[in-house]
Length: 339
Ligand code: COA
Image (cartoon, rainbow, N blue to C red; front, side, top):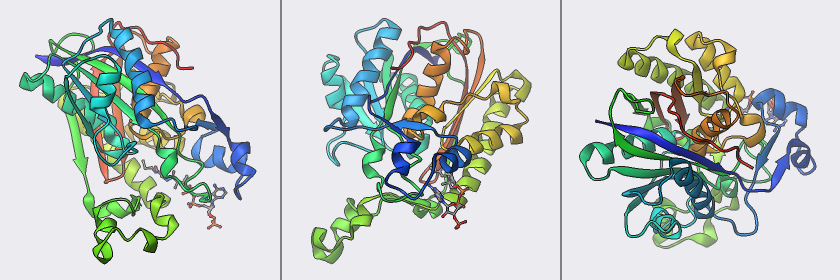
């Protein structure tokens, strides 16, 4: 028994913010952003669009790709929830007409898609579900300080979704073994200090008045994160390849979390994977956290580069710290290019 990929879809909010747009208000330049991150533009939510709105759009596309209108469970990975409480997954299920199915959120920042795949596969393995709609959805730009040039250029919004069904381990689309890990001792390298229980319980009350505005926004230490990302994505990818009994030469596509094109290339270099097998779309979307890997898979499948039978290595790293990897043989499913 295995969890098998049966459908995929993605969605990006329509508003495009280019590097030139950012340079109008920040002390930065198109050249700096492109050469240091690989990003040219990103999509940004506006007008009250929420994480759930993005999730519903991507989820509908994944259901269409799988040719189903019912699932047993809905899981949403997000680090930019539209509300602190409740989870958005039940509302997404309801808005998609999926009824009163099992539904919950999980939070694992940029590795959310890998953790969510493993959790969804676990629902199938436990017998709790035969089919799962799993969505990575993020409106993370709402947590980024528009005045902070070290973070504002990096992130973008979007959602990517997959449908998983119960199947056999030797079928195309069957998820392979997982490698998952974390290091909470480095949690402060990327964090939003305010809005949670630590800040809310301070001073014996909500303490909103005392909270500096910057604390409501992301704080990030880019350089150490960069090193950690390369190290853990490489080690995790190597671990999962070993577990799956694949060699690097078996990998047709490395689909790594898009945090910085230099990170993806450095990991590929460590793995000795040639550049033509490394998937990249960060130039158009930036870092979309848990939506990053499914949006990239959808992109390369929709343009016909990723074909049925191709062997794919997925790997991601993010805040927490947290990381994860898995492998699969690409199944014969429909992927439609995202707007
Ligand atoms: N425009 C122009 N200059 C900028 C800038 C910007 N947007 N942001 C930073 N700089 C400057 C810095 O002030 C610094 O100047 P200095 O040398 O005079 O002090 C210089 O550029 C280099 O800064 P540094 O932070 O060392 O750059 P970097 O090469 O490490 O790139 C990141 C910065 C954030 C792009 C990179 O560290 C990174 O991608 N880190 C990982 C982030 C990440 O993955 N986060 C999500 C977790 S998955």
